[in-house]
Image 1 (cartoon, rainbow, N blue to C red):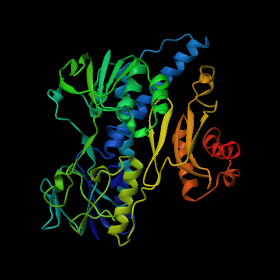
Image 2 (cartoon, rainbow, N blue to C red):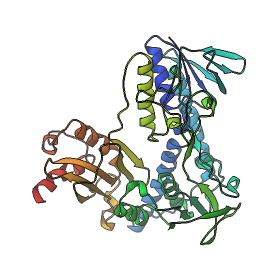
Image 3 (cartoon, rainbow, N blue to C red):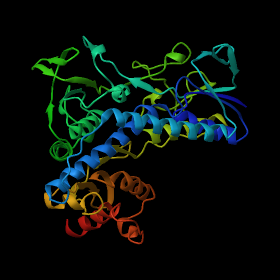
Image 4 (cartoon, helix red, strand yellow):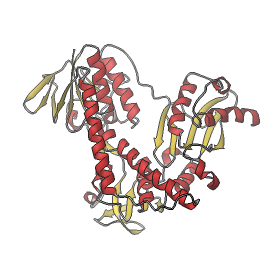
Amino acid sequence: MKIVIIGAGPAGRFAAMHAAENGNEVTLIENRYIGGKCLNQACMVVCALSDVTKHIRDAEQFNKLGIFDVNPVVNYEMVSKQIKETQKKIRGIITKETVGTGVEFVQGTASVDADRKVVCVLDDEYYYDKLLVCTGSSPLLPDIKGVENALTYADTLKLKEVPEKLVIIGGGSTAAEYAGIFSHMGSQVDILCRSHFLKVLNDNESEEYIVSKMLKNTMIHENVEIKEITDTSVITNYGEIEGTVLLATGVTPNSDIVKDIVDLDENGHIIVDEHLQTSNEDIYAAGDVIGRFLSTPVSRMEGMTAIKNIMGKELTPDYSLIPMTITLPYDVSYLLGTEISDNGKTIKLPGAAGPNTFWHTLDGNTGFTKENINIETNEINNIIAISPSSNIALPYMIKMIKDQTKANEFNNFLEIHPSTDGISKLTEYYKRYS
């Protein structure tokens, strides 16, 4: 079968390799860099910058305790340079890995002729039996006067130095992550929220902990109306706030390539059925461009589901329990999905003293875990965990929930402390003392 995949991010790249390894003739087309937004603009950049932030935070704590006598100063231009060099090296590795499976990798801007079932890149044509669209998303530029004066996540590595003042427009995970990064690097940060800060967590206590413990020099402004963005400030219904402006207002799907070929929703996402097939029977779509859960692992899952369906399966992606993380000095991990609820009782357990928390124990800053539990069945309905290991713990706990493993059956699972023990043991504790 001839399969063309447009977009070499997590959804498209893994789908291409799987199809090629199973004997298909696969062409993977990418208009810029292999690895997609995750490697080149978003997730990996945030992780890299956050690693620097964590060193700064630890140094400040050791100074406070009299262990160190240092005052780290960030050379942001060098940080950006080294991140770009690392990205380049990773791109080389994954390109070799992808091509090694038999995938033909083509760089260039594609256009689709659905009537002829061909994808064109410059003067070359690639015929397909099935087409998989994994074109991802781009920063959303809201309809605000002067929006062209603002930066987005795609521009953060273009900065020459840490801004003295940073104004972030948006109240979600991206706003929190960049506030955590730049506030620890020395910026005075103002976050301007249209409604409520971090409403995705639906937990006021977690929001308060993040603001007081995970961010520095940061002011949260809620219910803000943005009137204009200048090159040095934001003008709001509460007045003018000065600083370099960063948009964290969400993303928009890169669906223009098929906008006249398949059905789109009102926000431009490609509409797919339960098998990720579009309104054109020969075209499938996966990842950010379909706009379900914006997460690299979810995009990868969707890409693999779509390609297996193209190859004759009838699979559906599992959106029941999805681990999500906000990358801060401690990861803030939480659940999304169709099977979470808060209909039980909630209990909170302080975070354990261990790697990356020990030296913050005297400050009472070790994070915490909250669970919502069905007392009758001893099943976990929902979890929020703020700790250095929460991004590791939650996937384990999802596996436990999906396998219908009771907390006491988890006792023979040996692990590296601290990871899931603070979560699984909490369930048993609650059962005994509630």
